[in-house]
Length: 247
Length: 381
Image 1 (tube, rainbow over the protein chains, first blue to last red):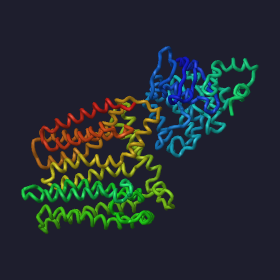
Image 2 (cartoon, chains in turn brown, yellow):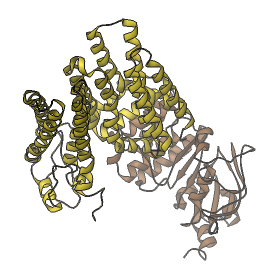
Image 3 (tube, helix red, strand yellow):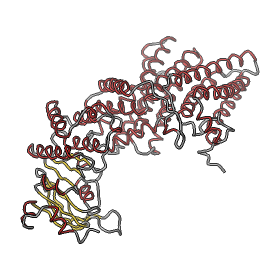
Image 4 (cartoon, each protein chain N blue to C red):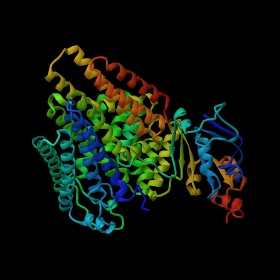
């Protein structure tokens, strides 16, 4: 599946500055793509555009060659996209495991696939007793993040979007998250990772999108970006590109 | 000028209006010696009981919100002080005021109906007082059993001893899982999962009210149906239709939150059809005990089984239509005018189904059909 934005711009209200301006990019659903940018650069807006949560976009949004113009988050369901937003929303009075079970049943995921996913998540994201026994309202921010990531990857989604997935995670879980992303990539599910942690992006992503104040600075292979900057790290590249823009 | 929605006077207005209307109805009934005055009393009784129960419940859960006439005349500071006292003691204090008020109301109405026949109004007053006392004893038992308690969130800014629930989190989790599993078995496919989720969420969010209100509604309705014998057929059936409405309208914040959360959780993927089936199933389960009770009563009184079945089916369908409207409400973000109109129509059809013994089912079928069409065409997602 290829997500393509052609000369897309978006403003939250008429007469205000554009949150995204003339974006032209393609995202392959089997690749892991990193999305980086400063605060307010338009990362979350871009994600919301890709998920069809924002309407009135200027330009064209195409998925697999077919134009998309749909609000209300329907794209997530129609194209089987997993999404873990920055602000995690969970069914507060249910346990993480109960939510997973119900989400799996509604998505008609077979029992072996469910068990296999749970084993992967439990091992790498360190889901302990709390996941089965405690209601989500008692979770810490890291626990909530883990639950959201698990729900996004549950089953075989065509593509997964993670917004700031490392927020609140301990180092072991960050390492585990990388393993999950890689395992799912091998199974054919790519990921779009929006993150400030450039080291995390560099170590997991194949492709990279850099945003600055709503405009696209780079979209393409991460290796090519590194090569063009003489083997510098993504952090160094980012600093050299944006240090004059970031207050 | 105090805000009518906030002041004790404004909040007491509905209760006062109810009393006033009851007295007027009693006078009208009493003006005609041939009229059946007694059912008027019973017609008002369920509304009275449900409202008393609900307001008591609110007072105990949210003592600072002035929602009932018994704190009438108390200042804000006094009410706040009252809230800080031991709940059982407070309940007894309130009981005296409430029982006195209801008994006075009852005596006034009965006097009007029975042209001041002392033996009649004494009977009615005694029954009313006795029923009130039972209700309060029940509430008192709940407090004593620590099933009803104030929490910190009920007392913002106040230091208050939070009583521990007797039902531990582990037991509650297990119990809600059991109930949710039962709910799941009643429906097919995706609807079953939605019903399971709804049961889990609601039971854990507000276990007591969700588990106590429906049985209480049944108990009161049953009492009215069987206590009144031959006099309250239509009135009892109408009360049976109104009862779930009164209870569920008061619980809407709970359902609102559960519904809102369902919308926000994008990882639940379901079709509008599944959700409608889940709602209809929930409505049918809620209403079935009322219909069974009416059937038992009709069987007790005798009559043709065919017509009897039609009559009861008509009432059940009307109840389903009404309850389905309520479940639609839980899944809407706002109480829209078309939905309100639909709910009112369903209620009317339910009453017509009660009033027309055999062919009343026609109204119910129309009401249910219209509600389904409405549900189909008003899917938020």
